Length: 148
Image (cartoon, rainbow, N blue to C red; front, side, top):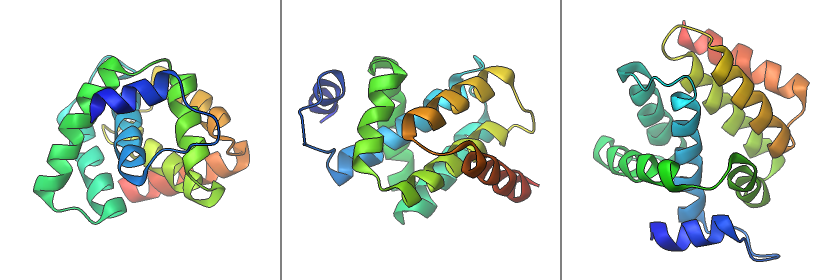
């Protein structure tokens, strides 16, 4: 499954969006990429990703853990963030992309710190997803209020 998704991400066919299951793992891998942006992937970020996956997709703890493990593998092998994010943009309507941005902020803020590398990656991803700066700020504020 990962090999076909990697092929898709490296050379996306025109007018063919990601399947729902591929979109799910692509989003999970993007969450992992944001968490790893500061060269730290700590327990709070791992837990935040798992919680996002459980909530967003209605997964059990075990299912979310399995998806997260696949996402960690995909993130290492995935192409550059531009193509990776474009595939998500093409597969996800704007309103849902806002919830993607909120999830990215939840993961980035999970360790209680705002790291400039995570911030920079999220700003880049927000742009690639076509989400406005205003909406991104609102998503960050909502994620911060949920964090604590």
